Length: 227
Image (cartoon, rainbow, N blue to C red; front, top):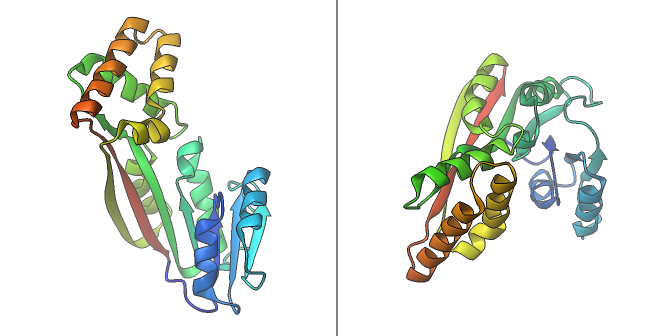
């Protein structure tokens, strides 16, 4: 983002506030971090986490597709794992570009759930379940679409940086990817039978016991500068 002491920066989808608090340490008391989220509960939790009353953070409840900020009022803006939950990510990105000054940097990180992999000998069931997981998100392919969105918004100096998360522990995979719940949802939707889902989960648990369980996904960070 190019944030530095005195910068005024925007974080969209600030969640529990960890990144906003980190940013506030960078911009210092002469700067400002505006942390925006659509969840009142998240913002309240973030405010409670802010231990230093001198930190320059403003928590704002709002809709990222219709932000009430003036044009070009931020030196830089970022959004992290929020567009995947949005049906029209291009509108949110257009708003972020609007409120960022000329020459300011916009950064977005999003997973691409079309890259979700699970090692299994049952390819047919696995394909159905990983596709179902991806399609459960409003914009499950947003990671691969970031370059097009940034290009359409006439950003320059665009960079796309991929990163792959590998998980080899089924307990962690259950917490991160809801494997069992996803399998049960696929049964309810008629995508697989209950016996197929059970057999698939049993196989993954056996692989974990043998130390060969594997799953992964790739996310993409996009960065660009407003002309």
